[in-house]
Amino acid sequence: MEIAIVLFEGFDELDAIGPYEVFENAGDAGSDLTVSLCTLAETERITASHGLRVEPDATLDDRSPDLIVVPGGGWNDRSEAGARTEAERGDLPDALATHHERGTTIAAVCTGGMLLSSAGLLDGRPAVTHAGALPDLRDSAAHVVDARVVDDGDILTAGGVTSGIDLAFHIVEREFGTEIVRTVAEEMEYDPTDDVHATDGR
Image 1: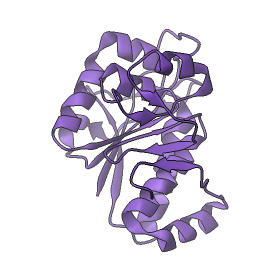
Image 2 (image 1 turned 60 degrees about the vertical axis):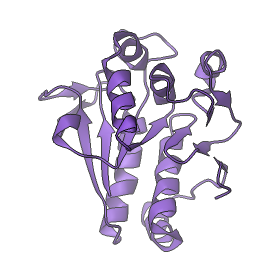
Image 3 (image 1 turned 30 degrees about the vertical axis):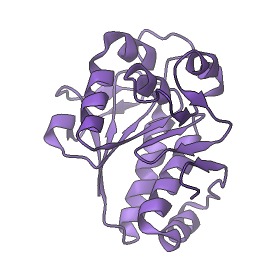
Image 4 (image 1 turned 135 degrees about the vertical axis):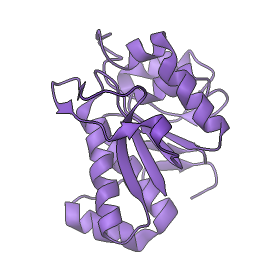
């Protein structure tokens, strides 16, 4: 399974790095996955919302991901850089829609869900986002669900900054089973949430 976490100027650090660590640990524990940090355009460095500077591994076009994880950041405070700016620019939502059309599963953390909404990927679907962005999500065509993680098959969302860790654990369990999750949770000394709304009953 190839996972790409897509970065943009002003992304929230924990939205991306939390899932990255879960996936890397899952790989170390025996899961057949790779994870990379990607951008839309080639760039040497991306600066996150709190100033962390990251050197991406590749562009999305360099990869053929089975799963793309989209962080949030900067939506609620209307930051100059961040998810709201990316939504208004339109390139990232367009790319996400294209990848989804090709069969890629898309997962969003926090206000990354609003980028999925901008792409039309949440229309008619259950979803959640950061509490501060819920009014915006309710104004969209999504069906807002009160859960930490929402799994609608090929579209997943998670509400709040730290929920990306829970989202990643859920994906690992869904794809690779509970034993891997148990191993990674022990390694990270983390208790993953069971507050998951899954449309198939998982």
